[in-house]
Image (cartoon, rainbow, N blue to C red):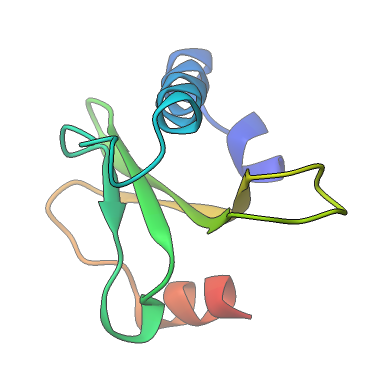
Length: 100
């Protein structure tokens, strides 16, 4: 929640729109258009919502939970996010923070 609240309102709204679209047509039905991507390697099993603004790339990392009594059914769980300069890689410590 802190990550989303730190973003410009238009970027936060775009994250919300992507999450709504995924929830309405969960993978593999949701193609994502480059905004919803499965992670690989150490991040396998997670998904990444990708939003670009004029100065930065914003990433929100999520898990899909198919069944959960605590969550009331299938859910998208947002784990955390990061903002990085365009055309730069995320730092490994950022990925480690999300995995924790």
